[in-house]
Image (cartoon, rainbow, N blue to C red):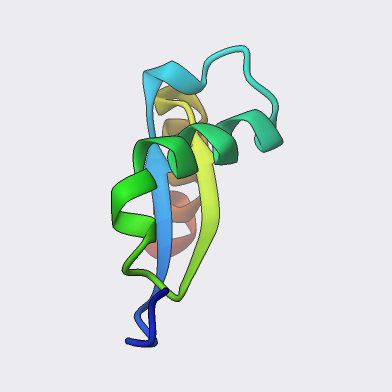
Length: 67
């Protein structure tokens, strides 16, 4: 049991997310971090995107920054 209070917020991009629903993506991340989760108090996945989805989200931000 973790008493350290470590809390993380992450955004993750992976080709392995292709064709997966959001819940499946979160489960993949949690499964990959099984050992690390023993030391983590809280993990918040704010984004779990494919590279194409990430690229699409970045383009509007770039055009807004240029305006």
